[in-house]
Image (cartoon, rainbow, N blue to C red; front, side, top):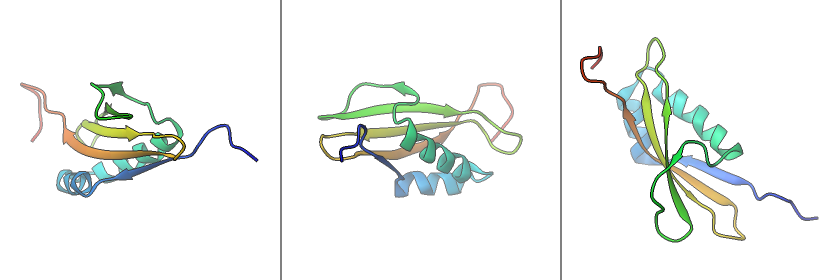
Length: 103
């Protein structure tokens, strides 16, 4: 039995996890929801310049909620055949606007 599509595994790096905890206000929960979604659709977001080999760099934005600032999330998608793809959420940053409320 062969699968038409290999599974993708997504993880949050220690650095991104630390940033989520520092941001607080539901940042970790939002990034965890994105992590789960990336396992279904690994090419969400905007692709940046390709990294080394078959790895691809993506960035996406999570809109703000009443208690959490908007977040920019950067992740690396590595899908070397025949292994399942691996996504590493590497960087999480709050979006700050000039003249806007926050911080």
